[in-house]
Length: 233
Image 1 (cartoon, rainbow, N blue to C red):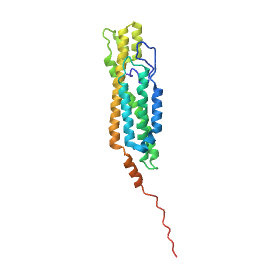
Image 2: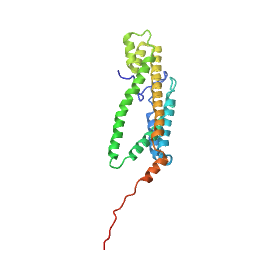
Image 3: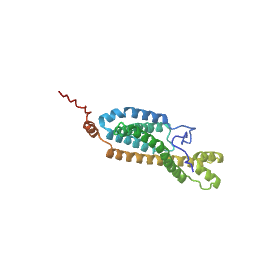
Image 4: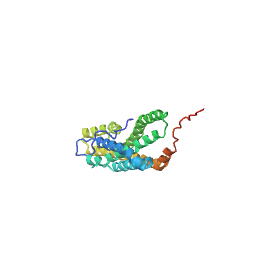
């Protein structure tokens, strides 16, 4: 069964509004800013603190987004999505650069391919898990008492079908239930994302090198040795 919706769908939860899309452009702006300055921040603070700070921003933005309610509008969405993008830019760009920086020149191509493969596989895998969380919460929060079985089944399958059914039946209570259940599902999904970001903070602080360690590793690299020239008389 497909999830009822996705975080990027054009949909407004407010009963009095027509439609509004989540400001993914603002999130993308935050991502671009974070990625563009991450290397300079990492050079000063080290990869460990930069990645940890990025995940802290990411968790903060997601936790703020998880407080979305039926009365929230695009202004509130515009508040937390740039924070999410900024955190992603700091954490992901720095973590990828650090991982590749630890590899030799001969293995850099393999490392880059592995990172690209993880990105391609991880995105649909995460979408499936988070979509399941959203779908389960959406179905669990619906109030379908007294609804015909066919209508109830359609409402459970899709939030859009739920909205359409509520409007066809002229049921304000069903429309409110569908929208409220969808918002609750989004909130739970964002809380799960925030928890994953907190785990990223812990893992980054444990495994990534700090500025001192990185500098020591650079200094420990042996300088190229020139062949000795032997002069014989």
